[in-house]
Image (cartoon, rainbow, N blue to C red; front, top):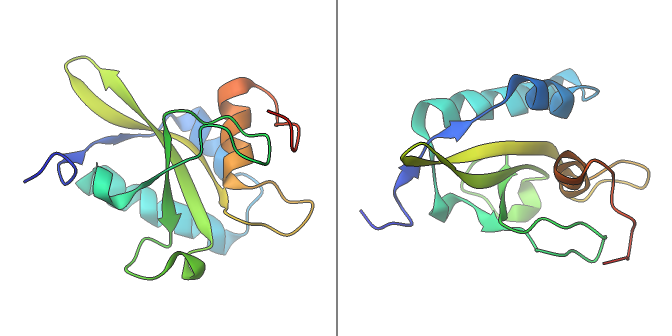
Length: 132
């Protein structure tokens, strides 16, 4: 098994999780919850995720973060409208993925994206659009 296929545990802080899924429809919360259960059982490989832009055109700053497109299935990204944002961290002697945020990838105007939500979780405030 290559390093990019090695499965790494995913850790969910309950306060971060509650804040991340609060306000979504029952259907979207269920999508997030079923993905969480799957990740807690099987972990996640580097091959399953894509790197987030360290500095996005939307003002987000997510260095070291990755995105997992949801629903988690073998389909093009256009058919997976949501994402988890995760960050690889050291926990004792092992690496783990820390859950950072959940949300739509490209929402309608007035709705925060998963990446804006992740920026807020990491930096305490939403990004200013278009500013780096």
